[in-house]
Image (tube, rainbow over all chains, first blue to last red; front, side, top):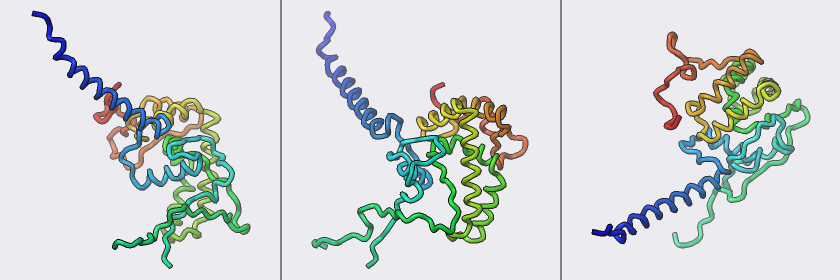
Length: 85
Length: 155
């Protein structure tokens, strides 16, 4: 009896679709995080440090190990404000 | 509530460009981001212990922002000094460790190999060791355990 290869087409399709969607999701998250995996379990400390990283490098995940900050760093912090009047 | 309600949180970020008043001595801030800082954290603790403790005790008295500026300047200067020394002496191991941390959610337990080479380089060149305060006596600190339970899935 010949192998029923038409029946295996759906398996192949499903595998391909899982693979494609997984790859696209991975590429999308890595592109948003400058090629690194996403940060998870982020607490308030990590959020604060990522805000500081954005001040220093322009992106939440950007890193630099130069001890000298870019000019204007001392006054570039964003203050949380609320309109009360 | 079908009419427009203006919110109270500002949509545009508020940045205040006024610098510190001239009466306060200027110190250059540390321009290192979170990854390298986490990598150097225990060495900053070993190198700058007195200044850090002074600052913490001072802040424990009064948590106003303007209170402990002098101790804060000392802390910043000490940390900047250490980072400069680390970069002079152990730049490749330092970069390897913080790049590993950045790719692993900044968790120490996933980056033990680069950490070991950084620790040995720091001990040789600068005499600083990483100690975890609060380890019970008789128990090996977690960064020295050979086969830990919590480790990376892949080798």
